Length: 121
Image (tube, rainbow, N blue to C red):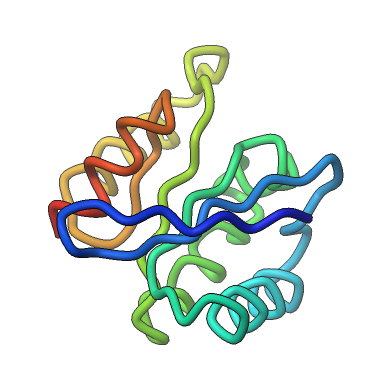
């Protein structure tokens, strides 16, 4: 796992890259959050979609809601970079739409978009 700190608009955010899954359940999500906060002091995280298990994007598992609620409770803002067009689930698309219109969680297509979203809130 590599963590790079990005500064934009006087806000610091951690860009995490990895060749392996980093979020597979709620405990691994909490571990990642704690590691990033300890190593960088950042409360904003950018993560690649490939670092998140596929079950996260199946809303019926409740994994996304469980993990993202923990991040909100701990004051962590997160942007997940990826292509979401292959998903056909209307509830997932609605969930992504609602998240992207909030202030804590963003599902975006590029690093630049992630930095813009996280530095605007």
